[in-house]
Image 1 (cartoon, rainbow over the protein chains, first blue to last red):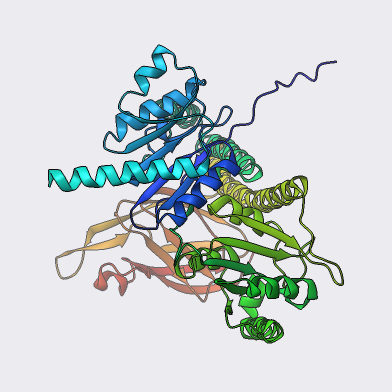
Image 2 (image 1 turned 180 degrees about the vertical axis):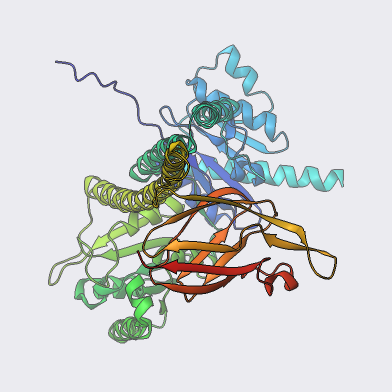
Length: 156
Length: 396
């Protein structure tokens, strides 16, 4: 017999803290906690302050897609995005990052097959193939940071 | 300032709820008596408070997912820094062996953080120093036992999580070990602390459980989840009880207010009915119980011997029967209150602006002088026939 109560997915929201450490800062978006921590650990030893965010999960609301915005994303120098871009909600996060923080560097771990929509979203983003090791991610972050620093020095 | 709303639809829903809540209150205020508006207001406020409490409790049971953070590694790449958080478990040999093992590793820095868990009761009774001394003694004994220069200790009276956060700014650990019992003991760390640290900091966190005489054990995911759940449920229960107490106090206040409003209304109605009944009686046969004397208080209403106008009661002589009430219908045309006060007769009637009914009751025979105690016309206050007069009470 039915109880009459609807089975509703429990909502989970992300509560971002603000940065307490100086630059350079890297935000790692990875739904896999272990993988995110492994990348963060490598980045810490490479001299970066890190934040690890699981991204939107289930029906959870990502503050990046709301009016309040995301404090860590706002103040970060580079975002490592590994949210699995088969999902529309992950693409939405990427779009918001590009729209709201156009000067923030984005390193996106991309799936093997990229459709036209994702290709458009990935425009001007740095890319890494799916399956990249934490060491490869750290090396890529260092490369992008160094290149950006050289560009900044040249333009100055 | 950040918007408290997550989205436009949320802000719109809030506006809609406010409007829907206001409609019955405004209708009750416009169409019904004051007490009904108060009751509706109380019901609406109660409903809103209950919903807010329900949402808060739901949030306590399933907290937000925080974004983990960590500062850059401090020192050379070969160095490692481990923070060990422990208190009551510092007496366990297995934990000391683990710290000793860590201290033996090359280029390793270990900080033993000992939060003296200070309860609100200890803060109230001033027992903080003894708790800090106990924590210091445990830490010193542990450091003496381990005996490595690269193992340091720190005692704190702060909340353990805040103390760990501060340590991230100074010691900058690469790994955190939280040592607890399976269940929290008096003065010991909460087992859920490891989960809270794991949620906030982007470094590896190990939760080691030490029980007397046994080796270190690591709780599985299910146990960690249970710690978080139990904490959430306990916090929700505590909040629920607080909310219930608050609701009880609010309800008592509203009920008192409604009772007060209704009592005032009933008294006025009763007097009015009594007075109407008295008016219906034939003249010359007044009932002692329903006798009404009408008078006024007029500011600058009566000329004095000095030729100037002074404040006055139009009737200043009252004749009553001992033990039998006399109704005074007084129209105070002034904008401030006045009074008929006679301590000897046990009479203190505060005459408010407007027309109201008052009861004059004297319990002993005699002639008593009364006067107005509210500073008004100084001359009138001293003159019988103005703001001063006599009450004559005769035995029944």
